[in-house]
Structures are given as C-alpha cells and as structure tokens.
Amino acid sequence: MILMRKHYMIQTLLSKWSSSTLLRQRSRYMCILQVKPEVQEALASKQPVVALESTIITHGMPFPHNLNTARAVEDIIRKEGAVPATIAILEGQVHVGLSHTQLHTLATSKDQCVKTSRRDFPYVLAKGLNGGTTVSGTMLIAHKANIPIFVTGGIGGVHRGGEKSMDVSADLMELGRTPVTVVAAGVKSILDIGRTLEYLETQGVCVTVLGDSTKFPDFFTSDSGYDAPSCVESTAEVAAMMVKRAELGLDSGMLVAVPIPQQYQAEGLVISQAIETAVKEAESSVRGRDVTPYILQRVSEITQGQSLEANIALIENNAKVGARIAAEYVEMQF
Ligand code: PSU
Ligand code: MN
Image 1 (cartoon, rainbow, N blue to C red):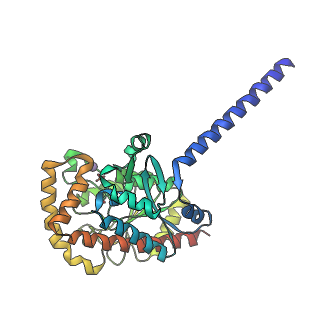
Image 2: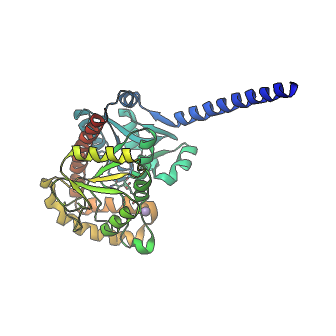
Image 3: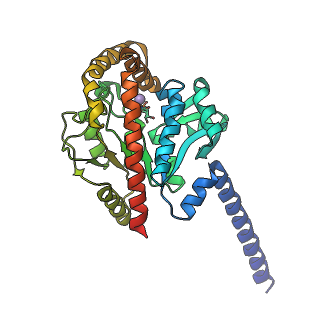
C-alpha cells in the first residue's frame, strides 16, 4: 500500500515536472518567433499570407532602393488581397512581419546586418545581432510560422566552378528539406544554371515554370538555354500542385520560376556581359557568403543601375504572382 502511494506520488511529480517543462519549452519556442499581429490574425482567419526575405534588403540592393522596393513589394501583396510577412532578425529576435520603422532600421543598418542562412541562426540569435535572412533562412522561418509560400527575386545556386570550390548555396538544400513554395524569376546567370537544376533534381525539388515558355528563365531573360522540368500556365495550377504536395506529405519545397516581364528583357545582353566581368573579378577577390552580394553589386555598377531596375521590376511582378497563388491555395483548402 505504502509502496503504491509512493509510486503514485512520484508519477504525479514526474508528470507535473514534465508538463511544466513542456510548457516552458513551448513558450520559449513561441517567443523565439515574433509574429506581427496582422500576420497572426491573417493566419488564424485563413487569409493568404506571403513571406518575403530580407537579405535582398541588407545585402542585395543599395539604399534607398532596398527600402523603396521592400515597401513597394509589401504594397503589391496587400493590393492583391494577401498579407506580407517580411522575415528578418532584429537584435537577436526573429520577426515574421515588420513594421515600417523596422523595415527602415534594417535598410539603413546594412553594414551591421549578418547575411543569415540556416547555419547562421544560433550565432546571430545568441549574440543579439541584426540579420537579413536569405532564401534558406526565410524558408525555414516561414515554415515554422506556418506560411506555405514565399516570394523573392532570384535564389542562390551552384556557383560557376562549384564542382571544384563546392560553393553551392544552402538555398538548394533548404528547398529539398522544407515544404515551402518559393516564387522567383529563376536563377541568375552569375551561377551555373545547368548544375543548379541538376542539384535541385537530386534534392527532390519540384521546379516549374509559370507562363507560356517551356524554358527555365535566368532572371534577366526568359530563356536560360535549359528546358524547364515542368511548366504550368496559371496560378491556380501552381496552387493545385501545392495542395497535392501537402496531401502526399512531401517534406520538400517547390520552386516556381516566373520569367521576367517582356518589356525588361532587352537589357539581358548588356547585363550578361557585366556578369562575365563581375564573376571574373569575384574569383580573385571574395569567398564564401560574400561572393553573391559582391557580384550583384558589381553587375549593378557596371550596368549603371540597369540590372537594378530590372531586378526591382522582377520582384514586383513575382510579388503579384505569389500573392495570387497564395490566395488560390487558401481557397482550394477550404
Ligand atoms: N540572388 C539574387 N539576389 C539576392 C540573392 C540571390 O539575385 O539578393 C540573395 C538571396 O537572399 C539568396 C542569397 O538566398 O543571396 C544566396 O546567397 P549564397 O549564394 O551565398 O547562398
Ligand atoms: Mn556560397
């Protein structure tokens, strides 16, 4: 009898301990993501939400273009009836959805921001730093916040010479391991597009081109010279693919490539020459996480801002498309 009572007391104590530990763990987990109330409400009431990255703000564009573009993209998403959720780290806190002031802080403190991909979170958070999240960083946070779709300009890939340097963007592995749909204008030709597509296949990433082309776009032009692994004509078809991906329980992501709008394509040739120069320069001057931002900045300088203009137009177009996909996806689920 005494033995049974003792056993009961130990069990009660254990269950109290474990539930309070669980609670503590859960609240710690909830605190680590600061979700903006507007985003929280949209998610709770099944409204479409579109995630946005922030490396493009901290490392992809000069001020004030970075801030203006970030705001314009958010406005476009709102106009399409979805809620934008820009993801970034401020003073060691991950934010899902930023206020105007926070966007401004991020855009004007570029030099103090760490380009944050999956590997960088423990360091940036523990040190209380600011961070612009890359495609990989944004995907993983979007997924934790239950946002299934994310819009950007271009994703990272296998760098030219990557077969030797092993400089392969963490974005590709993230697409293979995190079930978020990424809407982008393809892969910039600063990269090895053929190997990038091969690697995406290896990682089990569904890659589809949205539009009337059967070619994979290379950001500044609609034809990289490589065939698209699959193509669809409407945002509804993309949403249907997302539904099927979820029904099957696939834990990999999807890449939706939206070709550059026709009127910006003519600049492609000028830009591709600038890319050749910038890639050569990068070989002898930068390494690791600095390579992509360096090339992007040099291409913009060499083309005297032409690449930047195309870049902005592209992202805005992707935002419109992404918001429509998000809305169709929500509708199909309920
Ligand atoms: N490509 C662009 N613009 C960008 C980036 C890539 O045209 O701003 C950024 C994205 O945040 C992407 C990251 O996730 O660079 C990839 O960097 P890396 O190649 O170091 O993985
Ligand atoms: Mn790299």
